[in-house]
Length: 136
Image (cartoon, rainbow, N blue to C red):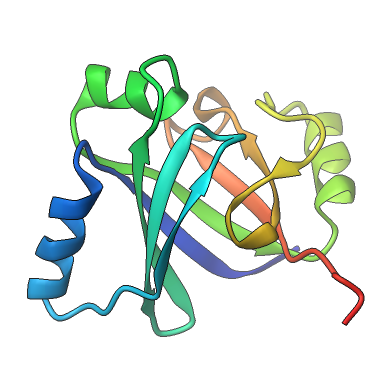
């Protein structure tokens, strides 16, 4: 079901400053992008087969902005790469998991993503993501 840990999302209030901090630690940023559907700007740092994802809200009413207001900066979610996102969501729903997304939505790097509510996962926000086949 789960192929690997795709990334660990870290909520930050100032992306530029956070990127500098992680670069000082020795990480190299692979790029930044804005994800309008999620109302965030992100920066990715490769770590082995996974990534660290820094997330900064672009709107005050976004989920990441609410997280920062309630919890401050820190780990926001853990993301797992899966092969059949829609099938996994259906199976999780059947098992009684509380899903934030019952259908995939666009995420960073052109992936399809969906979240499992932390109420169902011991207070851990879990993102599931699937690489979209672009036909190449």
